[in-house]
Image (cartoon, rainbow, N blue to C red; front, top):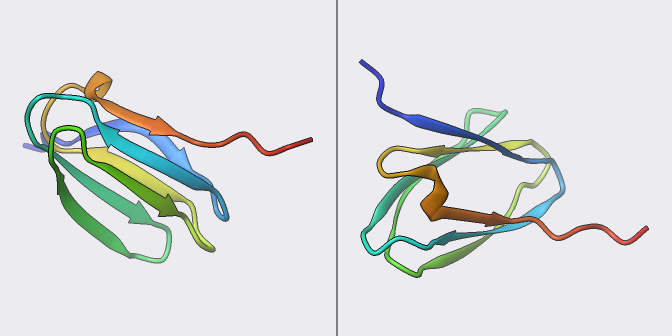
Amino acid sequence: MNDNKDIHETIGAGEMASIENTYSKELSVSLLCGNGCRVDMELAPGQVVQLSAGAENTQVILHNGDPVNLLIIKPESAS
């Protein structure tokens, strides 16, 4: 059985994003990119990480907790 919660958030190639745990407990998160790269991390309460997706799209996977507690901010590009 797979309990992973795909929060359906993709950080596009070349984009940057901030990912923040707004919950009072640790959240287990994986970042998956198209070339097979995977980064697993435990985000402490209030912890923020900065991410640059590089040349491939990156998918965010939440392994525990409610997706509402994972804040993902992607800056808008100037037009």
